[in-house]
Structure formats: C-alpha cells, structure tokens
Length: 123
Image (tube, rainbow, N blue to C red):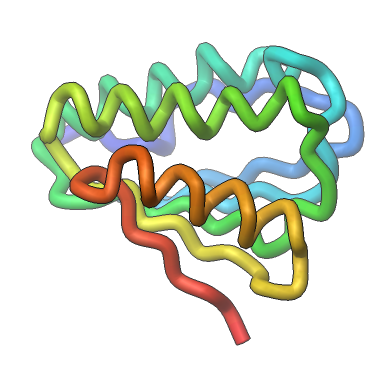
C-alpha cells in the first residue's frame, strides 16, 4: 500500500511541510502566494492518495501556520470541497485557537462542508 511518504512536497519559501505516514500532514510558517507555491497540486495529490488507500481520515495540523493571505485560504477551501464531493474520508484539521485567521477560516469551512471536515482546537 502506498502512503503519503512518496507524495512530493513542494519547496515553498517560509513554509515547512512534513508528511507522516500514513495520513498526517503538518504545515508551519506562512503562505503568501495564491497557489501556495505548488500546494494546490500537493493537496490534490494527497486527496487522491487518501482515496486510493481508502483512508478513513487525513489529519492536517496547521497549528504552526502563522499567516495565510486571503487568496491562499482557497487552498483549504478547495481541499474541503473535494472531500465533501467524494465523501471518501474526513479531513481532521488541528488549529491553534489563538490564531484568529485559523479559528475564523476553519469555522467557515465547517459551516460549508460539515460532513467532510472536523476541526480540533489545540490548547
């Protein structure tokens, strides 16, 4: 069975992306470009791999993601919409409640596609 380990992680200045088998992605830093410097294709590849492997959920930890510009928020919206459309797995997002943009953005995502996403607040 293939897992996330062999999905190519884009090199984005100011961003650290760590993929842990079989279903965890941790993102730290900032995203200031619209497509996230290749993150859209990366998220799409993770989504495809999760479907192929029939994963029950994908864990996305953004607690260390300090800033995302308004255009790049679309990356997370797109991923949540793909999950919602397919219904193949849940996207479990771990956020830092002290980061206003995270609390606001991920709350809105939950309202949009509550059957596809679970948001957990880190202490």
